Length: 584
Image (cartoon, rainbow, N blue to C red; front, side):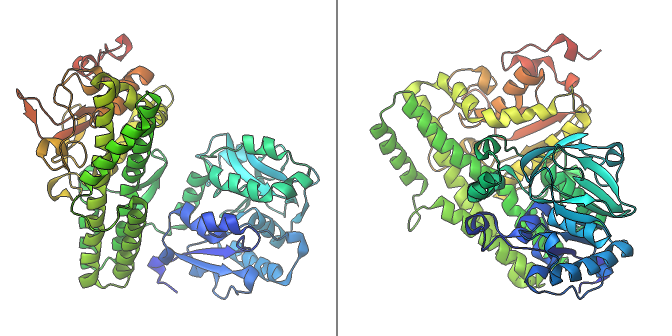
């Protein structure tokens, strides 16, 4: 076992979907893998015991930071020997005071272990995205207090807890389930829903189980139509993880305001390269930290990779829908790809190369965990160099496609193009609405997101993802040169040259000489938030060059309060500052 300061989370695996649902398992992994991904924990912080397959819980509960009991295709009412043995062990775990969370089957097994009753739900099976209503006790509970009074989660079960064991407290219910959440002791909980299941998993599950669900009397089409993302699942799991203390020294944690993992640290520390931090950590013997950062470098890069892919494909479709001949678009894109891949040997396969970067990061992480610093340092650098090469070629391919829109349809169409491409991201900025979210929380989230994006694009000197922190009285900003993406046009670091604005436009700060690719930052951070929220989410000072003036660096600002944003920031995108945003 690990030392006390390195306690792991025990996953009591009570079933598998590999044989019963092979297509689902192939796409999402088995039950323990789904939890590991949802929790954001690397393998070295987990210990899995597959009790359904005959594995024995031989360690005492206090050997672990916490215990999570999974769901299962099995039924607690079957009372199989392995279930009874696991129930005995869980009884001791609850008495020991170690944090315990049972999910679905795990929830029912906890109830059985402590003297409750489990059996088929008399109201029938529950499946799909369900609304869970928290009682007063639930809203005041240590684990659930941060959740809304009514939250949606995904569920799939046939049996239920029918009667609570002595001393247990009902915390939440749903239309078909009396005990959706239960507190069994001060640090032991059970939930009937699945906080680890997202919408994609649920759709795959329903597709695989459609026939059996229909046999059970469930309208499968209606069920599919009602599936939702259930956004409160991950925060709940991360809250439980925080209560266990597992990963308390983790350099990467889940941030509820951002809705994803972020690299912790002060704003000065946010300016440091993740690759450099991983290198320093492994050289200083902080093996886990180094491994976590090596893996996180891929997480930082993922959004850029996915956006480049989406934007290229959607820009091509935009050209075709606007009447440009497919033959012409194909020929010009082929020439563009040839330009951005010049000097390479072998085929350009972005998806495969992205997967290879993930493999390189895992290899680097393994070397970090092994304490092999001499081998780990160049392995971390290999991850950066591989992503740098792929990033810049994909970025310039995307820039080239944007340039084709200007060439065929006119520069004035670029604003509409970016509105279309950024629609989903812009809609997500509603979470920064001061009518329902305190600006202090939004500003923090925006700074984390900005820092991660800049590191992911490998901005700054040496293209390592190192940026400069700039503090002023009313705002805080990240400055970087070179910009890792569109700003490379100004510094001449691109695979060829790509179009810039030749006339002023509201969607490009009304500046001449701004890269057409960079205009998406204006649309995302200023134009759309002003139109949606009444104020910009960020102020962006872009790099540009127009013969009369030149700026090589880029700065992204977040204001201490949106009322402090100057009038001219509104004016340069064709807007006027609303009277209610005027600072008295």
